[in-house]
Length: 76
Ligand SMILES: [Zn+2]
Image 1: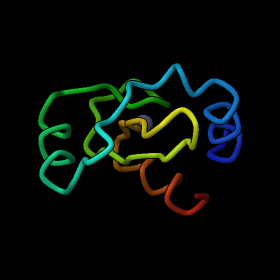
Image 2: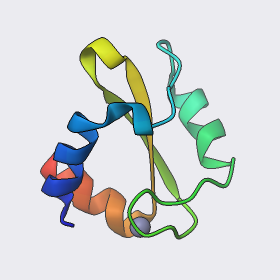
Image 3: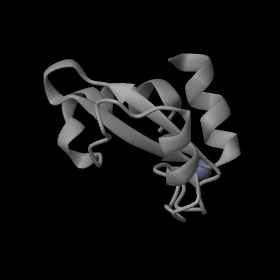
Image 4: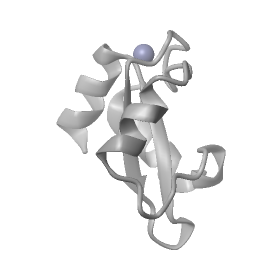
């Protein structure tokens, strides 16, 4: 699955993602990165966290390793 496919999947199944606080800021993202989540795409330890604003589903965490973070950032 490429990054575009993943973003489409997330749009179709946003409830698969953990909800992020509506007021999450840089500090919340730093905390999330320290919580040892697994990369959504490959299962490796996630080095980064992104917040996706999914409209009616609110904000959701995207935990990604560096490689996939870069892939998604290019596509998003
Ligand atoms: Zn990964």
